[in-house]
Amino acid sequence: MAEKIVNSERIDDLIAVFGSFDENIKRLEEALGVTIVNRDTELHISGDPESADKAARALEGLLSLAAKGEVIDEQ
Image (cartoon, rainbow, N blue to C red; front, side, top):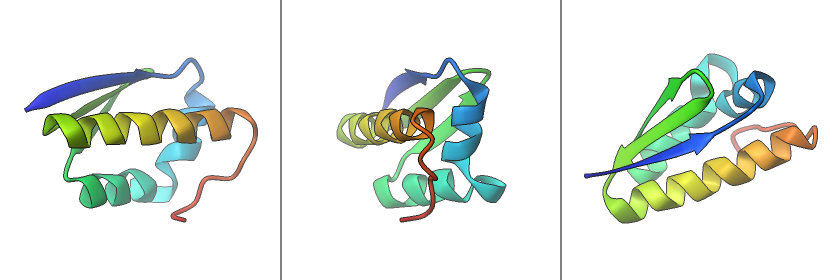
């Protein structure tokens, strides 16, 4: 089991990425077989090394989009 940590400076970006009732994070967890836990401005991702790495890259991309003002939805 591997753990990756993704940091975000802005809480608003995290809120946008998580979505209503954390639906976006739940979909990412289901799709990649990982667990994502929010601790302040850090997202802790645990799962097998390849899946954790994919999830970390996806979250970094989503946080980047959120920082630019893009709307994050299940798509």
